[in-house]
Structure formats: structure tokens, C-alpha cells
Length: 475
Image 1 (spheres, rainbow, N blue to C red):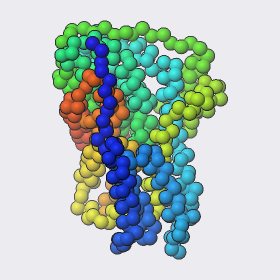
Image 2: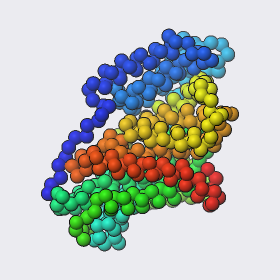
Image 3: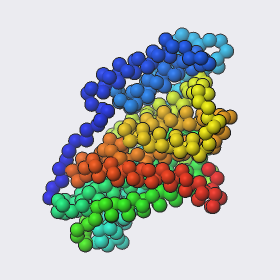
């Protein structure tokens, strides 16, 4: 039975939300100019306008997410930089306008760019599909074991490739199998859901796995706190594996198979051309250098730029390949980094922190609250936009005397919370891909995604710190 393609209807992205978003954005932008907030500087008022505007535009997507990011950078240059119009009062140490432009070439963007090159190259030479077929062979023909194999492979790929690209790749492997199953066989839904669920969970594992991770690493770097590629993995991967197994068990129980065996197409033909061989070596070397950063001391961002240079210099990537890179994602991350710089430089972060008596809130409760808000927001809006909005505020709270939490933990848990949102078709692109196949309905996605998201949040916030203490990991 052929699968039906259906459009994914975005709840906040329709034609109605665009004019509403633009009008509401204009209103909130002018608010700090007509209302004086006690204790907030002139620069703080100006960046507060930008912050409120960013919230509205990122939530409603009245303009594209990356366009909002670019607008943020421009407004910060015009309002609070050393080129501000009108100039800021004497005594305020305005950041150089080049500081905001530099966010477009932030080291964490180079790290992400390298990940994009590896993902695009894997698709170009069909390395991803061939590796998936080879790796599925040991799992036999049992439906439950095949689902486990699909989820393990998808999660592993998503650690180094785009979640969206990984989902599209593995869906191409499994869709022919789903099409052979009877309409009433619940395994159809289980297999279709297993891939986006595993892609969302797997993206948690590395700094290049998903944009919120990159935003967290970049914001920490701007605060003078370095977190290496391996350190992130040590903190994230153990619970990622546990959550992946829980998700697999849940899917096998919610969507049991009627058939006792399945047949997958596992024949793989690897490209042996010279460009493909150059890519294979570049891929292996890059990942190896990322994994051994503590040994050689080369920054993961520098390593991430290595495949960019090699693949362009050897002409493995053409100008057309370069154009196809997901530049809009990089601009979105850059906008978040720039917003964090502006919030900190203007004193808006300290003012926002001072509005609430955080002295009475424990560190663990604060982290749980921030991660929960990230999970809730990311269910309805982009997880990148959520991370961009919450991480600067979270870091300000962590660095304040009232809370004095570990900044790396706060940024880490906000990123995790944002990445665990997978309850709706609009929550993540992998969810949208699964929904578009026709094998998944909104109810199944909501039930499965909600259970996995909440379970993951509990595991990371409560169980992960205990594991770190037992193993001597220092966040």
C-alpha cells in the first residue's frame, strides 16, 4: 500500500499570524521607548525593545527566522554599538559595531559549518544510506530488532549530521518496508515514528547535533567558559543512550507488529571515485579529531573548519555544493549569539534577574524550571529560537550573586530541554517529515513525543548529575 503525502499545517505560521506578528512586533518594540522602566539604563531600554521584538517574530514567524536574526544584528548596531543613532549617554561603554558583525563568523558557527559539510557530503556520495544498510544487517528480520537498529543508527548519524538530513536518509530506507505492511498494522506507525524520535534524541549527543547545542556552546564561550566537544559528549551521551532504549521499548509496546519478520533492502554499493575517497578520509579524520580534542588540544571549531577547506580545495565540493549549505541555520545561530552579547553589554540581563527574588529558588529548581520552559516553548516554536531567547537569560541568572549556579549546566539543560520537544508535527523538521508520510497521525505523535520528552527531561535533570558524581565528570 502506497503512503500518502500530506502537508504539515503550521499552527503559528499561517497567513493570519504574519500580519498579527508584524503589528504586535511593532507594538512591543516601541513599548520600552514610551514606558520608562525603573533601574534600566538607556541602552537597556533599547536592547529590551530588540529582545521583545525578537520574541514576537520568532514565535509568530511573521518573517523568516533567519531574517529576524539578521534584523537583530542590524538593530543592535544602530541602537547600542559605538555607531548608535542617536548616540548613547556618556559613561556607557558601547560595544564596537564589529562585535555584532563578528557573530556571523563566531567560532561555533565554523564548528557547525563543518558538520553541514560532512552531512552534505555523506548525502552526495550516498555514504549515509549505504552505511545504514550495512549497519542494519546484524539486526536480522525481527521487527523489534530492526526498529532498534534503525533507532541506534539514526541517533548515531544525528550526532554528526543534521537531524533533518538523517531523518530523510533513513526514511528512504524504511518507507518501502512500511508500504508493504497492512493498513491496520501498527508497526507502520512505529517504524515511521522511530526515526524522528531517534534523530531528535541523537542530536543531543554532540555540539554539532542540533542548533540549541551550538547556541549553548557559543554563549558559554562568549562568557569565557569553554566546553569541549568531548566534554559535551561525556555529559550528554550516557543519558541519551538510556532515553533511546526507553523510547524503543515504548514504541514496541504502543505499536506492536503483526508480522514476525520483515525484509529490508540492505544491499549497499559504495562510491569508489576519487572525490568520494577524499570525502571518506576527510570525514573520518574530522570525527577522529573531534573525539580526541583533549589529546591534541586543537579546538573543535578549528577542526570543524578542516573539512570546509579540504573539500573545497580538492574540488570535491563545487560552488553549487557550497550554495546548498544551510546558511539560514548559521545566521539563526549568529542572531542568537548577537542577542546574548547585546543583552549582557546593555545590562538588561542583570535588570531582568533583579525583577524576581531568585534567592529563594534552589539551583536544581531553577534548572528544572528553565529546562521545562524550553521544552514547552520548543513544542510550538523553533528549538533554535527557544535557545536563543532563554540561554542569555539563563546564563545571567547563573552568574548572578542571587543564584550562583554553574553556567555550563544552565546552558546545557536549556539546550537539552529545547531538543526534547517532539510532541507535534511542527516541533521539529524530523517530526514534520514523519507526519508527511501519512503513516503517523497527530495523536500518536503527541502521546509518544510527550512521554519521551518528559521522561528525557527527568533523566537529564535528576539522573544525569548523579551519574556525573559517580563517574567523576566535572560539568
